[in-house]
Image (cartoon, rainbow, N blue to C red; front, side):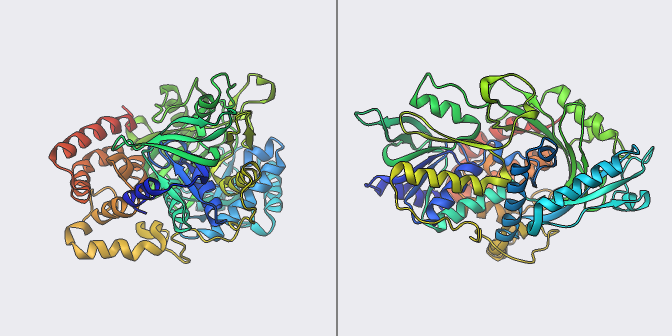
Length: 522
C-alpha cells in the first residue's frame, strides 16, 4: 500500500466512483473493506492520517460492553459479542482473549456480578471467549497479586477480547487495498459537489502534500468522518442540526509492574458512572477511562487535570501500589462519537447508546455516526447496503463475515512485539537482516527497531513522525519520553526513505517533540 500508487490511481481515474468515503477511521476503512470486497469501485479520502482521531485512542478492547448490558441494551451487547467473535476469527494475529476480574469488596457483589456475567456468557453463545466463574479470595489474588487486599472478599472472572486499534486499522486499510480500493491519507475533502438539482454528485479534494486539486464524481458520497461528521454534514447544508454529543475519555499508561500477570481488572461502577479498566497492553499497564462532556471535537484533545486525578484516585483504590503522577508514562485522550439522544435532551453522555445511526439528508449525503470499534464490520455492512440502494449500485452480498483480514496468521506469540504484523512479520525481519543498523532497538524502554520504521514508510503510507511513533508503532502511547528521545533517529530513517533533507528532518523532529510533550503528565 504505497501512497504514490494510490495518488496515481486517483489522478488517472476518469469515470465516477461507485462510492467515495470521507474519513479514514474504523468506520470509513471498514466501509472501504466491505465495498471493495463486493466489487465496488471505492475511493477513501482522509484529511489527516488513518486513525488520527478516535480510532487510535480506544481502550484497546474488543468487547460486548458489560455497561450496556446493565443499561438494558441487550441487542447491542449481543451484536457486539457476535462481532467480537467474528473479529477474532478473521484477525487472530491482532485479537486475543483476555481474562478480566471484577474484584468484590462487599457481600452482595459476588452473587450480583456472578449472575450478570453468566448472562453475558449466555448472550455470547457460540461466540464466547470463555466461561465466567466466581473466584475465592485466594484465586482472585493468584490472578491479580497487585490487587488491594483490604476488605477483599473474592471476585468474578469473565473473558473478553483485546487488540491494538491502529494496527488493526492499518491492516483493514491494506485489506481494502488488496481488494482494489483506493485510499489516500492527507487528502482533505474541501467541498461537496452538487448537480443542477442540488443533489450531491461528488467531492472536491486536494492532496495536502502537493496542493493538487481534484474534482471527483461519485454515485454515492459516504460521510464516515467520525467525531467530525457534523462538519461534513454542514458542508452539504450549513443549517444541518448536529447529530453528535462528543465526550472525551482519558487513559493513563504505567509500567507493567503495576499489573503483574496477564489478567485485567474491571471496576463496574466509578463515581462518574463509567466502567474503569486496568489492563495489560504491550508490556505496560493501561488504566481508563473517564467520561467528560466537551463542546466540540479536535484531533489532539488534552486531558483535564481533574480527569487525571480521578483515574489515579480510582486506580489507587484497587491497586496495592497506588499510582502517582510521576508514574504516568503517557496519557492519551479519545473522543467518543456519541449520537445525541432523541429530542436533544441533556444528561450524562455515559448514558448515551453506542448504537450506530445512518442518515441520508435531502442532498443525498449518506452519513453514518456512532457505534464502537467492536461493531465496525456490522456498521460497514449496514452502510454499504444503504449505499447500494441509494446509488443504484450492483447489489452483491456482503462477504466480510468470513473475510480474512490482511496479515491473517494463526498461532502468533502475543509476547512477540512483531506479532502485530501477522503474515508480514518475516518481511519486516528481512528488512532488518539487510541492514544490521535497522535491527537495533530505537530506545531501551521499548521493543521497536528501525526496520519497522522503514516498513511503515514503504508499505503503510506513514508520512510524519506522528504517523510512525503514534500509530504504526505505539511508542507515544506507551512512553512519551521514550518517543521524544527516539524522534531524531526515527526521522533520519524516514528522511532517507522519503528522499528528504536536513531541513525536513529538523523541522519534523521539533514539531513532533513539541506535540509529544502533551502526552506527559507533570
